[in-house]
Length: 118
DNA sequence: CTGTTGACTTAGG
DNA sequence: ACCTAAGCCAACA
Image (cartoon, rainbow, N blue to C red):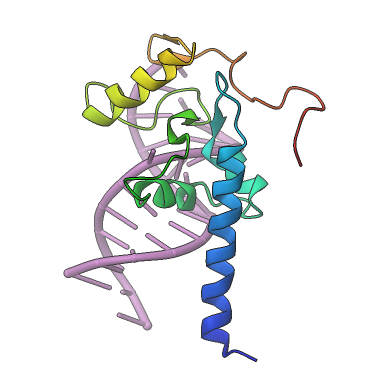
């Protein structure tokens, strides 16, 4: 039996792993929002937490972090920043085009009907 | 322990 | 369509 402190730590770790797993499940060419991922990872309403996790992502991580955008269809980075350009580059490489700093709703929400892996 | 900050979201103006 | 205010979670000073 662990002390509550450690249980909480384990919970957070588990949540992060679930989040990573969810992110990894995003198909190429599609994108998802922060809040959406938070919900799928069992942390409904924790969009900022998702942002925090991505910010502290290991450099060598192979997660498709670039497929994560805001709920409004825009990139979370400010335009003209390095992060914005990197993400945009990766997205376009996968066929996701940005129209005036925004992503088309069609590529948004990767889980269209019943092909959800959950 | 309070306040701030950040790869966010939603509801109202 | 853009701006604000509140709410959200974790980390840091």
